[in-house]
Length: 336
Ligand code: CUA
Image 1 (cartoon, rainbow, N blue to C red):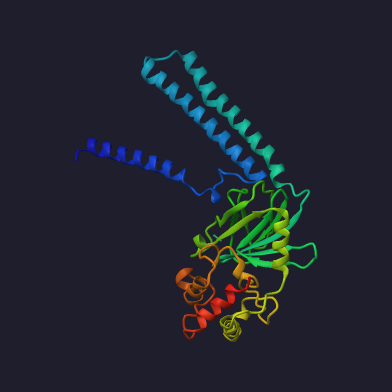
Image 2 (cartoon, rainbow, N blue to C red):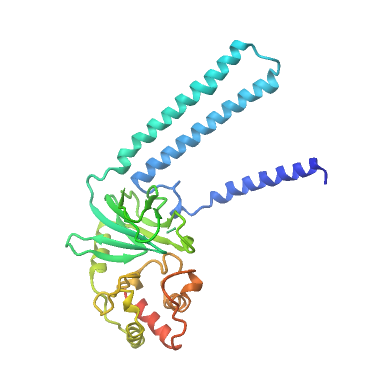
């Protein structure tokens, strides 16, 4: 193959790659897309993005037109005076004006985005390897802890206090707002005001170890009444197991030391190292957004933690007698 043919193939390949990126990126899930804003903050950020894209495209078109003019339309030498004008005008004045305008527009958004005034709700979120500890501060004064799931009332301003006990994580719900780092020893804040109900997806946006890519969470924006009901239910202690299988599962859960790391409020399990499981059966996902919530998924997770989430702290309990895993899975699924 001659270098000319090679060049042609390379060009064809890069055009194909660029086209497929364009095609596939339009298929990105809405529930995890910053370009489908569903909160006041995200709308402002998306506006800024589109202004920058539009401005960038116009500047690109002007530069291309000038390049065409100079190389094709009038390739002869230009006078010193007009060349100087072009360099000073297009190379100094124009970028200074455009970039200053964008900077001022971006800076004007910041106070609105970071204002912590008029808060309706406070939520603490800690990023841990590799899950999210979520704590609601309720009006009754008793904090309610859950994991890997955030629910918000539509139209209300929620203040997030973001921390980390281990390494740096980054909290990001693309349709609801910008990402904020979670840094050990610091508390960063973020205020979000959702404008639409729906289920969205958040993710950790900072590499934090082997299972960084398996650190997701679900965010459900609800009507305020439904949200209040949900939070009330989350504040209740766990229901005693209903079925015989779940009763056996609870016995196995306590006998195998699960309570050393997990809390099930209303039982003697009060560990705080891992996620609170009081209402784990009612959650939107298992294992921080990687498995559905059903008895089969619980059985898979407890028996193969390390295979599903590399380097996870929870040991695998695949060595338990065969009937114990499904019973435990039944018990956890019934923790509604
Ligand atoms: Cu946590 Cu990446």
